[in-house]
Image: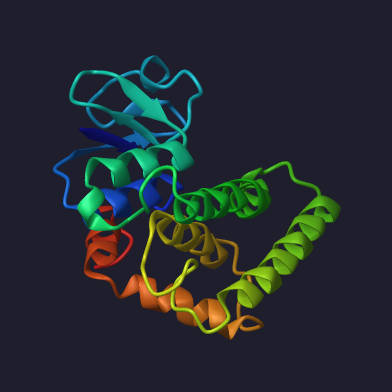
Length: 202
């Protein structure tokens, strides 16, 4: 497999999952401004949507979209426990989280990457993000991870998006439970390996 990624982007969630699952893979960094990969490929020919992540499978097919790739990776190594068995209510709960993170966290905070965002729209997005953080704190309760005691692909995704708060210099001090949550995930060996490989930490 080959993961097309950009450092710290949402592709990091899939990168983390691959390392957590212990699946061999190659990395190819994408220049999102030029839409070229480090290996010299035209990224639009790999993913016509033009964004990461994209995962080239061993048979040459390419899969895209975080929520799909995360489940694909988890299903390749079911013993990893990254996602419950397909068809179970536990799996649907993880899928519920993946969709929430995608639509309510990823897209809300991702709007701040737009250089043409107006001050009013930026303020609106940050306020919405804050309300979603309140919800997350309530749902976490005293649990170490989103669905309980076990780390899942949903946690890999949420951790990645919460990492963007540093880029935008958002004060997360209002949500100490989320700070603790992110710190707990950041301490995982596979997460450290992914962040080092992407040049985010030494």
